[in-house]
Amino acid sequence: MITIFLDKCTGCTLCVKSCPFGAIRMAEKKAVIDMTICTLCGACVETCKFAAIELKKGTDRGNDLSGYKDVWVFCEQKKGAVQSISFELLGEGKKLAEKLGVKLCAVILGSAIEPAVEKLSERGADKIYIVDHLTLKFYQDDPYTEVLVKLAQEYKPEVILCGATTIGRSLVSRVAVRIGAGLTADCTGLDIDKGERLLLQTRPAFGGNIMATIITPNHRPQMATVRHKVMKEACINKAHKAEVIRKSYPEDVMKSRTRLIDVIEEIEETMNLAEADIVVSGGRGLGGPENFAMIREFAKVLNAAVGASRAAVDSDWIPYSHQVGQTGKTVCPKLYIACGISGQIQHLIGMQSAKIIVAINKDPDAPIFKVATYGIVGDVFDIVPALTREFKRALKR
Ligand SMILES: Cc1cc2nc3c(=O)[nH]c(=O)nc-3n(C[C@H](O)[C@H](O)[C@H](O)COP(=O)(O)OP(=O)(O)OC[C@H]3O[C@@H](n4cnc5c(N)ncnc54)[C@H](O)[C@@H]3O)c2cc1C
Image 1 (cartoon, helix red, strand yellow):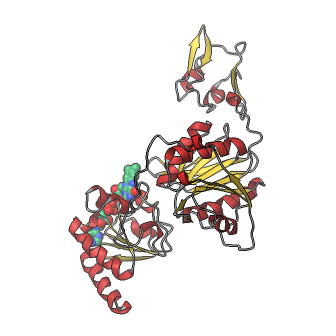
Image 2 (image 1 turned 30 degrees about the horizontal axis):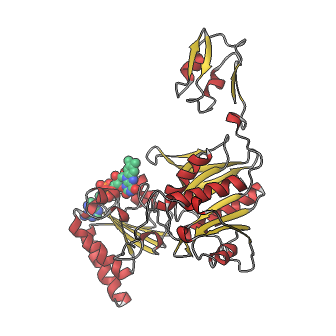
Image 3 (image 1 turned 180 degrees about the horizontal axis):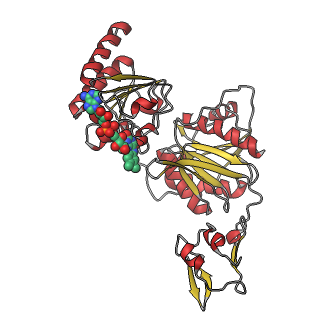
């Protein structure tokens, strides 16, 4: 809640100038805040020399933060199989739950998903909320949103984490709006401020040039989507048993404004990029779309996935689904081979946690060499065919 003490306000207009959102105006020489614009950032409080503005955190807009507890992980499933992003979130969620002294809860929606209970339990979930209904077999915006909103309103989680996947991004943004919570998209780091019980949500900002840590002090739950392959998967403990809460909802909750006609799976020519142990990526240094054939052949020999820089994707040399980086996929393979890629920060964000990075570039000063485990200064058109030949021979492929 933000208050202006009119007896202290001198009408100096310093607060008007300090507000980055233009939410303050003067009326009869006194400051007036437009609460439809104010974000409670506190800039005016710091500027006011007369202590005429007070900001009380945690009680704004009547949002009572008490009664919210537990860390929830929305777990994605495909044909009943829990997706690996969910195990990554359970691993990270456990650390957060321990710091907050609350339970780690998994939430899973689907149809015939009972086998998922064991998988989530052995990955450390203390509680599992499961909603099993034929309509929830495949992801659909309306029923998934409606069910997650109902669960969150009933059980009041303190934190909700979700994968920054196509499904996750679509779902939790809708849920956040419905329950009046904030949402930080695409986090690459999470932590807890124990004193304030705040989720510290870190993500790249300003084109990846800085890392911003975002907090949600005034609303609950605190919601974040997290990038795939950034967090470590929770370890398996077969002995761990979770409490299971099975919920069912009336048919009107399952209503959808869209009709699902069919689900068509993308047929991958090579390995799935996000899951691959080895990724061979090509950039602008390849000079044209035809030269990706050389990268594909190298990848085939290594049983690797094919990645690309945005420059290659933007030039229409390869589809977007292959793009690695800030606005593409995050990969965390054992081996990442960058061919003709300069290594701009936006590309590095998507691959720098690879265990071994090999960079092939003809410019010895290319930034990619700063993160590379092994650097080969040379022409990709000499190096890549030579490596392909040698690996073919050594691996007998
Ligand atoms: C908001 C934002 C988001 C972005 N998101 C992404 C993203 O997700 N992923 C991404 O990749 N980029 C992203 N970018 C773009 C990024 O900033 C770079 O422009 C891009 O990564 C450059 O791609 P590149 O390294 O292939 O091309 P360049 O920077 O042009 O580098 C080409 C390299 O190839 C080398 N080379 C040329 N010929 C040869 C040869 N014959 N043999 C060997 N080496 C050769 C050159 O020395 C050079 O180092 C983003 C940018 C912005 C602003």
